[in-house]
Length: 251
Image 1 (cartoon, rainbow, N blue to C red):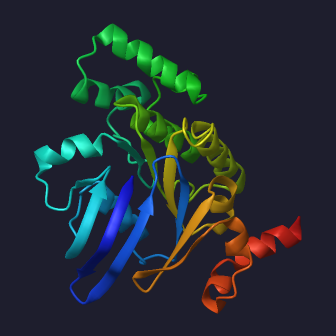
Image 2: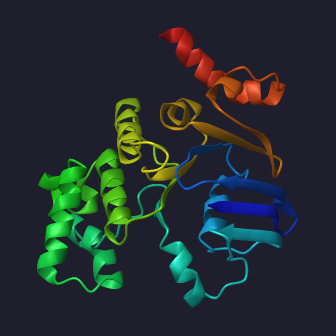
């Protein structure tokens, strides 16, 4: 479980989070919504201990990670796999080497075992034919799939973290990535790998998530399910989700 208790963070005079508190179970499917600059990605970075809050505490499975050293953070970080915005692949490595990177860094697998695992992951994600391609040779959607394969390679995560995974993609490719996210989180709450996706695209969030948080002015202004989101009376949230209603009317 992830727990934020009164977490605050500011960059100079810009308050990003203001005494934010929430709990998320590892099996949940959560979307964090908000416009750019509202702190969505910062929450992912705080979960991984990549940044530290100015005040408040962060717990992962009951362990306070707020002030842990880099060495101490390794164990709680292994509970997560993150897919960064734009994929963040290594430009100098082909697909196979990108996916194998974490296996070489964090496991004692032989080259044959690494090769078998890489092939299995690429096949699972439908990109086995791109094994020797360089990132620059791949479409945006293919790059995201490789990024997901790489995030799964080094460990069996308790939860996936997605940072704007459909940004910059055409609608069809974005829909395919949403389908992949759903596929990777199949099953009942006791068996599945949950996720947190941060996005400003409400339509994509609705395709994958079951719980929605809305960040505004450093606080969580909404936390609820799809029905509560679609029937909100909050005028600012209504304006934010207007693209969702527009999409539904066009169907």
